[in-house]
Amino acid sequence: VVGIETDFQASGLKGTLTAPCLPGFCGLALTASYTQKVAWFGTVRGRLGVASNGWLIYATGGYAYARLDTDAVASAGPVSASVSLHETRNGWTAGGGIEVALAQGWSAKLEYLYFDFGRTTTTWALGGALPSLTDDARLTMNVVRAGLNYKF
Image 1 (cartoon, rainbow, N blue to C red):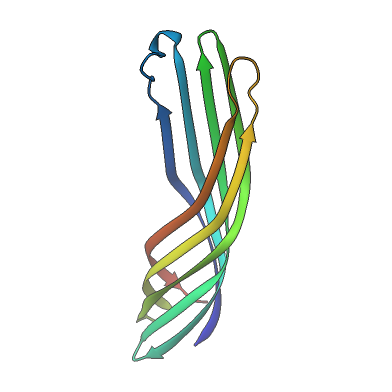
Image 2 (cartoon, rainbow, N blue to C red):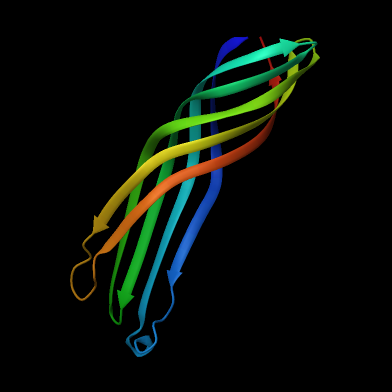
């Protein structure tokens, strides 16, 4: 069986780093935090599988895209700076799954996908007494999902 599939979903995937007060510098009120969130993502994939007795086992892969929101805040005493970056990242996905026919037009599936959106390095010059911030991040995700499908 050969086919094509596309999907789009909202996401709550989020990570935050907060710099602790460094010994000897706590009196200077140095703080920094960094947050990244994947707001949504989607794919356009090919599927290649083997069907038998109402079951389909398949491999899948193709194009992936995601919205990545990055926020960084740093302060040193009365001086503070914040930076926000919102971008759509492009990458690839690969995985596999199993699907079973339930009734006329209906099926259920269990699927695993690995996403790779590559590595990006961004440097923000905050100015003043604050040092620049460099973000060197590789964005990958592992997704396991179940689905209920209706085929027209």
